Amino acid sequence: MGDARRDRGLIALIIGFAIVATAVVGVLLMFRANQRAQRQVVHTLTVQETLSRTLSHLQDAETGTRGYYITRDLEYLQPYLDGRRGLDGDLRLLARQLLDNPDQMARVAALGSCVQERLRTLEIGVADARQNQFERSRQLVRSGTGKRQMDRCRALVREMKGEEQRLLAVRDADLRRWSNRLTAWLVFSAIAVFALAWYATRDARRRARAALAAGDALLAANRQLTEEIENRAAAEAQVRQMQKMESIGQLTGGIAHDFNNMLAIIIGSLDMAKRRFENDRAKALACIDNAMEGAERAAQLTARLLAFSRQQPLAPRALDANKLVGGMSELLRRTIGENIRIETVLAGGLWPAFIDGAQLENAVLNLCVNGRDAMPDGGRLTIETANTHLDDAYAATHDEVTPGQYVMVSVTDTGTGMPPHVIERAFDPFYTTKGVGKGTGLGLSQVFGFVKQSGGHVKIYSEPDVGTTVKLYVPRHFGEAEATGAAAVPADLPRAREDEIVLVVEDEENVRHMSVDALRELGYVVVQASDANQALTVLEIQPRIDLLFTDIVMPDMNGRILSDLARGKRPDLKVLYTTGYTRNAIVHNGMLDHDVAFLAKPFTLQQLALKVREVLDA
Figure 1 (cartoon, rainbow, N blue to C red):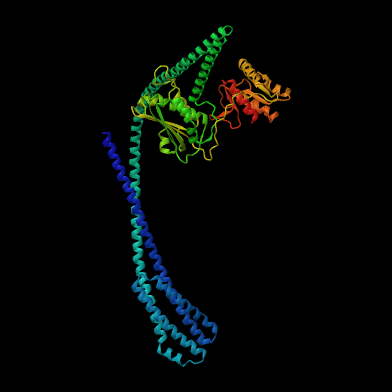
Figure 2 (figure 1 turned 90 degrees about the vertical axis):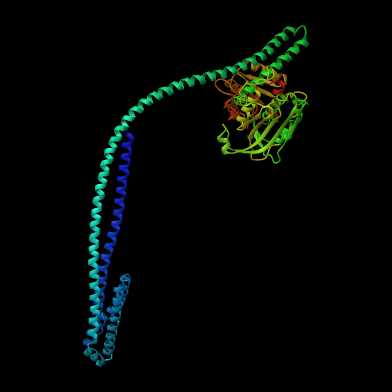
């Protein structure tokens, strides 16, 4: 019933709009016809006016000629001359005005001939009068030639006016008829519009009532749907929280497992070293070496976790990925083993990459080790480089990908491959398909975090029993690559020169004492401060400081602000930063500031010696 009513209403509206549209079109057509009829009436009146002016000019010419005959005064010739000039224009205007009427055009031609004949007769009289010879003029007057010519011209003008008067009557009747039609059509249109408005108002009221009823029903349904959505959102939030807690549990469980193992090594080895130090120094040193190895593994685990969370300090530069891969050949052969054949496919004309070279080398090494583990019976490992472009379509279907040009470094193995459900979790920390004790589950997560932090992209292509390809897309550098070369590690630790003085600023007392002892071991004169304010006081008192070695994360004032204040007083002061974790002080968008020297905690005596010497010699 409701549908039928809506259909009838729609049909009525369509009919009503059609009536209105027809009325509007009819009004426009009738208005144009009315305008055309008005123009024709005006045209008739204009033609009659031109005919009257033509006859007047002809009579003026005749009157001027007669006056000249009588007075011989040239002033009387002026109406004659003006009448002749006016007649030329009148006849041309009549020809244009009556161009669409053949009968009237024939009369215009006859009138023109008659006027010319009369003017020639008048010219004869004027010429004779100027020469005082009137015989020929008298003969023309006696013969009645001029009168006949003038009567004929008047008759033609009356005939043409009569025709125009007839046309005027016809056109006036046509104008009244169109005006009446236009009025009737306007009345009809007004009635149609009123009827349509009445129906539309009535239908609108009916629809409004229906809409209010539907709105109430919709409101009730909406309340019910909102309650269902809230319940579902609460359930989804609970599930997400459970998944989040499960992920956090997996992450913390993995961290606790690995750190407890390493701490067991460190604490147990140091305890044994302490017990054996007096009686068996060789075994004590072995225990210390074992503790050092466990501590280094703990530091590596921390670095991998920072890499996964995209918060490790990176020092990117323009480098040639071909040279980096080529320089890893010997390292890969020692790491991978002899039963794996390593091939490199290096692209010609490779663009420079903008990336942290050491971290990229670690990433490639990680992928190669994973590839080796996937080929227990041997196989082929292929490292490839190429220029590539990730377009808008690719970026739209992959998270955190910016369209543009990239340098691609890929590692392909011919191993066991991965099924889709493993690929989905391959980058999760501590997720591994290797046996117990054969992998930490942090390799791929470290690679993923490092590449993403560098503004790149990682993609895995794998098929079970065929092999796996991991492609690293690193940002292209627009310019030349910097010259690369492996830094030679000196046989002996670099030491202090000429009583160089280092100011150590560290709020953790045990860490500060360790740093001070290490620097003194290297021959430096060391001044220490437990916070930034104390360090500024030392800078005021101490006349010479060669290097400020400061922690970044400290209470009240961080190391970056301290170095800025210190350099404001001593512009030539060298600064070396250290921290276990930093953010927004010397690292921005995951990248070390370009003017920053940095040594990550924990560090060995050798790393400290090399970095301090590098900064002082810069």
